Amino acid sequence: MQLTNTTKSDLGLDPETIVPAMGTLEISNDALTRHKANPIIKHWLVSGDLVEDGAVEDDTDRNAAIRAAVAGLSSDDFTKAGKPKVEAVNLLMPEGMEKVTADEIDAATAG
Image (cartoon, rainbow, N blue to C red):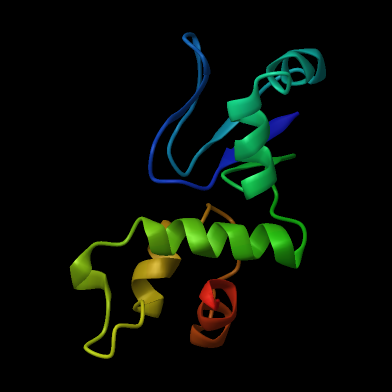
C-alpha cells in the first residue's frame, strides 16, 4: 500500500512512521488499518491530506490536493486579483499528478 501526502508538512502516523511533505510512503495494509483507528489520521484521509494507493483517483481527491497546494502558497504566489498563480499551485501538487488549470483551481477553492 502506498500513501501520498498532499501537504507541505510531514505527517506522522506515529513517532517512527512519517509520510514526507508532498511525498509517498510504502506501508502494509495491516499497519494502515491500525493507523486508521487514530482520529487524526482518519481526518487526514477524509480531507485528502493523505491519499491511499499513492494516486489521486477522483475529483474529490484531486480537489483536496488542489486545496492543500493552495493552502501551502505564500503571499507572493497570488495574483494582484487575489487568485492563486497556476504555476505555483502546480509546483505543490503531488508528484505524478497532471497539471491543474486556473478553472480547476477556481472550482476546487470555490465556496
